[in-house]
Amino acid sequence: MSDTKTGPAEDEMSDASAERLTSAPEDSAADTPAGIGVRGWLRWMWRQLTSMRVALILLFLLSLAAVPGSLIPQNSEDSFKVETWKAAHKSVAGIYDRLQLFDVYSSVWFSAIYILLFVSLAGCIVPRTWQFVGVLRAQPPAAPRNLTRMPVYAAWRTDADPAAVSAAAHALLKRRRFRANLAGGAVAAEKGYLREVGNLLFHFSLFALLAGFAWASLAAGSGSKIVIEGQGFANTTTQLDDFKGSRFYTTDDLQAFGFKLDSFTARYQTTGADIGTAREFTAHVRYWNGSDSEKLTKGDIQVNHPLEIDGSKVFLNGHGYAPVVTVKNAKGEVVYSGPTPFLPQDSNLTSVGVFKVSDYGDKDGKRTQLGFSGIFSPTSPITPDMVKGWNSLFPAAADPRLILTVYAGDLGTDSGLPQNVYQLDTAHMTQLKQDGKLASAALKPGEVWALPDGYGTLTFDGYRQWAQFSVSHRPGNTIALLGAVCAILGLIGSLFVQRRRIWVRATAGPDGATLVEVAGLARSESARTAEELAELAVDLQSDAPALDDAAGDDTPVPAATAPATPADPDSKE
Image (tube, rainbow, N blue to C red; front, side):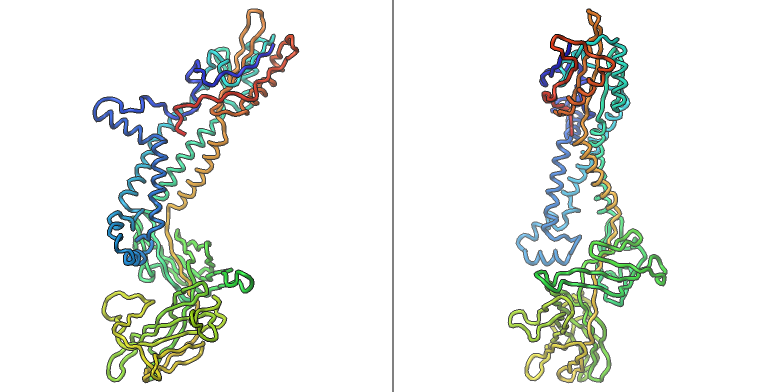
């Protein structure tokens, strides 16, 4: 005789330990302050802080708090841009300063959220881990007294011995990789521990991810440098254009290495709708590690493919042109010679820059200095456009031209005040004139400009390319990456592995036949539990064949669908 039944999900289990399918610690008190006085309130606040609900709220607040850091310029990234922003928004700059919106990631409020999230995760993970260890060391919970209350249930009568049926069921469940225990005339089996392992892995990985970011912010440093073809760079503060350190990474911790930029390759799309789009940026370098700058190793640095040297990474961030000029004074003496980087202003690399000739010497018995303000057009138009002027037509240097104006006077370089190397301070300078007009020239490589008023000559010798590099040291990146990967793996395990229990009980009836009962319980509603129970029942037929009944049905098949398992109120997943 066979009997198939699915019990109502809302019925109360006869055995609380059998019902509980999570290793989350049970709340020992109601969701209100326990006890009386300060200790009770502290205990209640700790329970709230270490609950998963509060951890999720803090995680959301952390992501929300990071938004201003991506919208408002930060001192840690570009202090000059911050000052420019303040000058353009004077009405709110003071308020933003008081709210630490220009230093979001080191602000008091951001750090408070970060630390609270750390504490919350730690307080949630530690007891849950010990609870899970206890579950692994314990035997699966014994069968409830009334198996018919289980969501999936099947029973049949057989003439096999109860002990033999129990032994056969125990062996079958073992072969199916269940943790099985035979005690009290019933078999209790459990499977799907990887679900809780996935949960714990996810939480530990999240903790590691936050720890990695925290360590990176405390022990990270970065600097940038523009290097012209043929020139080199050493990783020292005197050669870096800027440096941003941290509490545990200062200028004393800079790794000893450097490199020489032998050449730079830039390729662009020359046809079609994407004409001018970059196809390749590659810096060809020779680098050294340590104090011996003669032991060079060849390497290439590309966008998103940094060069890693001694724990630091060298990224390629930008590219441009450095016009090469030679300036001679009225006596024919060379007073300025070499390449000077110009800054790109558009996608076609129309670039602007200045030449500051601070050692020009004397003119008419007076010490004077020259300043040239210029535009470099890699592929210049034949004549300047009425609107765009000498703006380049293409980013590659197909027809380069250097357009210059000249000033004489005091550059202000001897005042001791900092100056922008890409701008000319003309407050104490006079723009020279030629033939009654403001002096200017549009030079091609090799051409010479005779400066007005007998100031000498300027020769446009050609150009070199420059590359901007960023040297970054972030020791926490590996920890954060591993944390992110493990968090994904843990999430996959917690979502796709089902924690489930199966019980098999064989009892002798008054008529001499043996009643075999099988029941299953899972964390969530799934047809897989019923299918697994049906497979077990079918496999048991060889050791406990069902007795024929009047209907001729001799194989028990549990229902394919079952009512939802009661939600576990103690779960913190």
